[in-house]
Image 1 (spheres, rainbow, N blue to C red):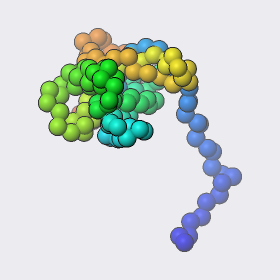
Image 2 (tube, rainbow, N blue to C red):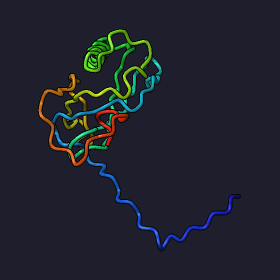
Image 3 (tube, helix red, strand yellow):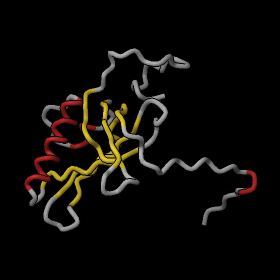
Image 4 (cartoon, one colour):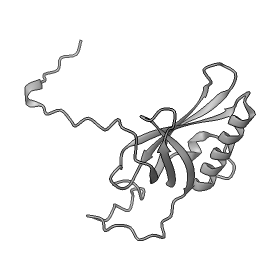
Amino acid sequence: MAQFNFNAQSHTPASTPSRSPLPKGTYAAIVMDSAIKPTKAGTGQYIELTLQIVDGPQAGRRLWDRLNVSNPNKTAEDIALAQLQSLCQAVGVTNMTDTFQLHDRPFSVTVDIDRKEPDRNRVVSYQSADWSKPAAPAAAAPAASKKPWER
């Protein structure tokens, strides 16, 4: 055992992050994590993407997308590959050899509320980040060593 002193009465718990789905809309985001996993039936594979919103009132919120890149259902596979192509184009990756290439590159994601599970979001589309629009005034200019979406 490790000795550690802690007085729970003097600690204020952090606010609980919202678990409700994001409002329908388009958000600036990055891929935080990715993994290739077998489907539940074991007959294919999907890429699970963890996305993080990086700007606006929803900044810091996360959502997930699953792309059935290998599936006996050809329609599901085609939809997933089209979404993956859209994401790759949005982040400037033309020949992906590892899903890590998608990480930490800004893009825009359009989300909606899932029709079957109204307490979840579904990704509708991926687009290139549009930096041509004037940004809201920042409190302080970001440090030169930080990525544009880091605060």
